[in-house]
Length: 166
Image 1 (cartoon, rainbow, N blue to C red):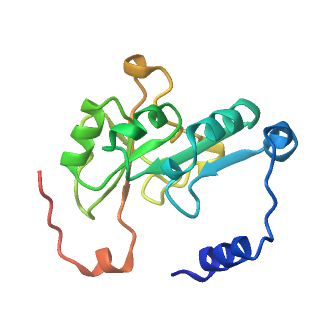
Image 2: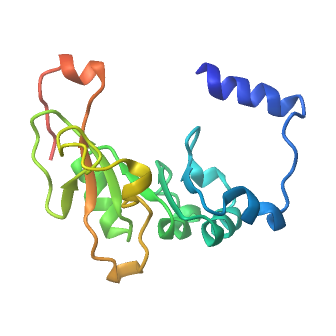
Image 3: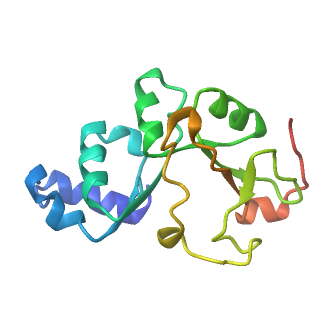
């Protein structure tokens, strides 16, 4: 387990973190941009908490690998499906999600995708907090915004030959 999440978990178990009432959300999240799931999948956050935070924050992003779970479908209004393959991408769109996909080095963008504007390959035109494109499917089926893709920058990917499954 990574040191930071493990440290947070241990502090939580010791009672270091207090329970926050929704009446405090404005003071805590107002004027801020929130990344849901920085240390875990945001689908484990009760949806009502995400809804209340979104009401007061300046903007938000988030990604879930739980997007196929029927109990998580309402989260698509606030977070993106994490697509690990072109097939995942197609399935996510068919289920009404926008998605964020890590694509293999040398692969092409799929129809309906754009390069992540904060990525090196897109010229780092912005940063995630300012971009905000990864904020779910705002208008259901009418949300015509593109899906986001980024080249796999992991050390493992850099040393592997290109293999793309369609």
